[in-house]
Amino acid sequence: MHKIADVEIQHDIMVANKKLAQRNQRILDKADVFSIDVLGAIGSGKTSLIELLIDRMDEKIGVIAGDVISKFDAGRFQKYNVPVIGLNTGKECHLDAHLVEHALEDLPLDEMDILFVENVGNLICPVDFDLGSHMRMVVISVSEGDDTVEKHPLIFKDADLVVINKIDIAEAVGADAEKMVKDAKMLNPDVEIIKSSLKTEEGLEKIIDSIKRFKENI
Ligand SMILES: Nc1nc2c(ncn2[C@@H]2O[C@H](COP(=O)(O)OP(=O)(O)OP(=O)(O)O)[C@@H](O)[C@H]2O)c(=O)[nH]1
Ligand SMILES: [Mg+2]
Picture 1 (cartoon, rainbow, N blue to C red):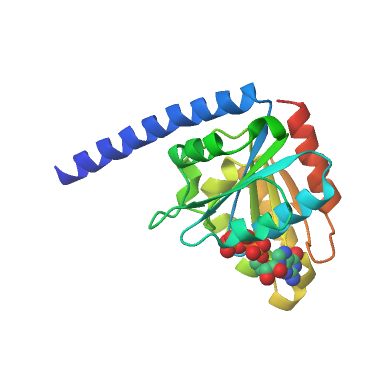
Picture 2: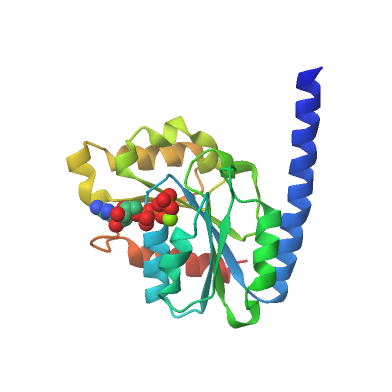
């Protein structure tokens, strides 16, 4: 009895979230804003990557930064003088389309070309919550261990681009980045995979090219 009720509630939440996500995408399309979900492990380099992209890309960028508490990441983006909305999820471990809907109301969409939506760092909860974005980028790093991909398959199955970051310290942490590439390819043969170091900026140009290609092809 208890179990049946749980399933129905979950189903209703997912249906409601999907509808809101579709509405978010219509709002973004109308404003001609290309939106990218940035998901990934805690501390893998999501904020660092968006900071570099803001700095290096010619497009006008805005950011929604999800944090469990505080506006820590939003504070980091404010330095770049781009529109930023910090979202606190409280006890939730993911953003949802309703939270993003409110952030879209507060962003100057007509002044933006690209919106990055940094989700709360983890590889599990955000998977099922479509936010209305056009592209899903998953950022993991070698320091989580080279078994990360095979242990968390779902997030990789839905990704458009996987960034395997911190390859500058792969040897020091004993991680085989090639194994991570192979595992991701096995789960999602169509996914684009880029190894990067945001310290040395290796792979950064490839990430920028990939985003531009996705943006052109929507
Ligand atoms: N060695 C190395 N360190 C990196 C690299 N990229 C990011 N870092 C460091 O990793 C730490 C976490 O980076 P963030 O960009 O805050 O990671 P995040 O994924 O946004 O973290 P959360 O939002 O807390 O989940 C920081 O100290 C970065 O300087 C990299 O390529 N190599
Ligand atoms: Mg961050």
